[in-house]
Image (cartoon, rainbow, N blue to C red; front, side, top):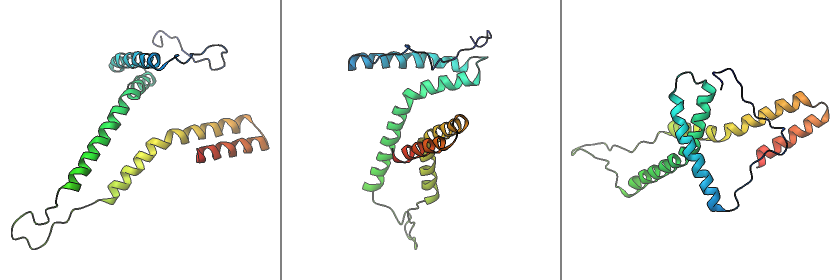
Length: 161
């Protein structure tokens, strides 16, 4: 549609248009399976010529919404297996016979702090950006003390919840 010159907008203010929750868990799982299948099918369009970068991001987001959980589970399983291997194996401080000085296991704290920082950034950056967007919109539309009160309430909910 975009290539043909049309635009698609989401009408947030439209009353009476919504999707109800499925009545039971099996129907919800069936709906989720259909959505997953559709996202996986549409990802082939990611590599098509002439697709706008925003639409490529939408296809990637749809794909990652279903692939991120298995990837996270794989990460947890592999890190747990690595921890188990290091816990149950005895370290070899003298790998070659006749060595005078031991080879100590090394731990690089800068890599550990970097991994922690990137993980925290990935987890909290969307929330932080959404709070900044709301602050900007509130500052642009409201005036006086109401603006500061709403900003305070938003900051409190951001930090506490």
